[in-house]
Figure 1 (cartoon, helix red, strand yellow):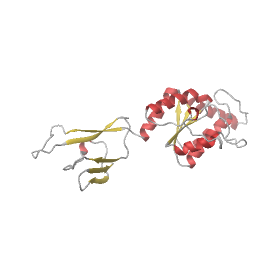
Figure 2 (cartoon, rainbow, N blue to C red; figure 1 turned 30 degrees about the vertical axis):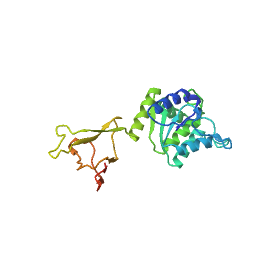
Figure 3 (cartoon, helix red, strand yellow; figure 1 turned 90 degrees about the vertical axis):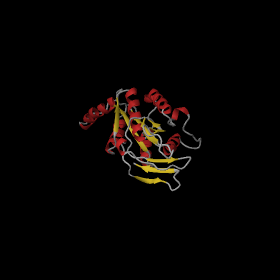
Figure 4 (cartoon, one colour; figure 1 turned 120 degrees about the horizontal axis):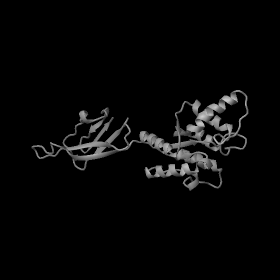
Length: 242
């Protein structure tokens, strides 16, 4: 799900969604009807439910604070969505316009001197600063972006780290394709597609017919074999962990 104020991020949200869909993700976003709504409930309740259905929530913080979650709460819908994601334990990423991040420090220095907040094109509401402070105090990583292309690059990098793409390949073993008994040797491995490191993995291979044996080539691998059930008794299934 993508969570942000809509007016100042309209084009950004559209471009970000297109990138995510092209990468194979299902994207929940309020303006395209992908979030299921119920006429008997408030609109924000539908967004909270969408967060609960999401594997990852992407938060964008910009110049606007947005509409309020409750009339007298002083908390915006986006800010409450951030709190809800934490409450229900959803993984999330926070991205903020680098110009707004820099302006926050200047505004805070003025406010600390007792000077009144003055609305500007960078920050339209002092509660934007409060929202950023809340995220910052959680000691969560806040990613700063300079423009749309920088945001797209950073989102893609973070998602590749969370969901690295590796392609399984299967081919005859070079230089030693057959044995004296007529059995054949094959090589199984992974090709790194996303270019991000594989920290932990669980691989389960199933074979149509029983195999004789399977060996792990430590000299050619960038990862370590740490466990797994190995080759099954009927020699048609192999599992390893790394």
